[in-house]
Image 1 (tube, rainbow, N blue to C red):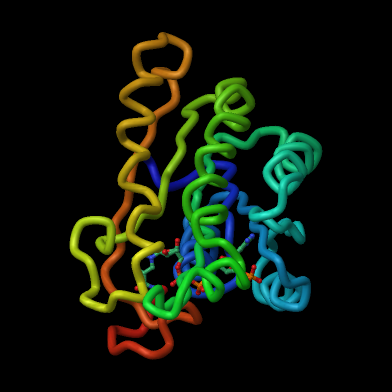
Image 2: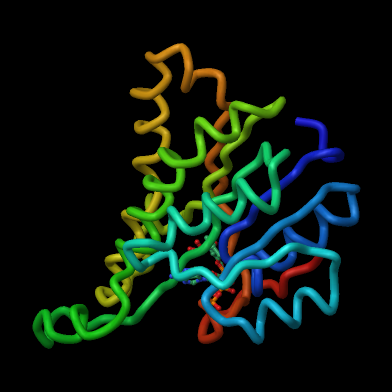
Length: 201
Ligand SMILES: NC(=O)c1ccc[n+]([C@@H]2O[C@H](COP(=O)([O-])OP(=O)(O)OC[C@H]3O[C@@H](n4cnc5c(N)ncnc54)[C@H](OP(=O)(O)O)[C@@H]3O)[C@@H](O)[C@H]2O)c1
């Protein structure tokens, strides 16, 4: 994949890996769009970089479709989608189901939303050259963290290759290049409590 000349939408591009990717890809002469839930973080990114932004809650029912609609209007040449947005909560299941149900459901944003976005964006991306979908997964999908409370983050994306393998049997979806990325441990707002290397652009 050539690193320049793409029109790239990064979900969760306001902090951590997404923000660093936005900065790095902009530096390599790409047009970049980002989304996130908090408008102040998006404004902060706009002040740093010439990025297009959308306030979008991917865990809400209308979120993925709203993102597609916005991208079709604001980034008609879009050819790369980076499914990066994700959350990680500490949930102690030994205390019962209440804690899990009382907060934002990780599976909604970590797994269901990339699947929905893949289905929604594949046709749109194929209208432009070099259509690519990149899923930012996690090593936790393969090696659990040894903390019983982090058990809903791991299943987030390892199923995405299998989704693409199935989709690949159709000639249309096979024309969208897809890749799964497993970043190393990186200190970010998701992972403020664990040790790791600071993200570098
Ligand atoms: N950090 C690591 O060590 C590590 C390692 C492996 C994989 N990962 C994966 O890499 C991805 C990014 O992680 P990170 O550490 O960079 O996290 P981060 O700094 O917390 O960034 C998460 C981004 O997603 C956005 N976001 C969260 N929930 C959202 C929702 N429902 N709708 C729309 N946007 C949402 C956040 O903005 P708002 O909060 O404003 O919405 C933020 O821009 C995640 O999928 C994570 O699982 C991280």
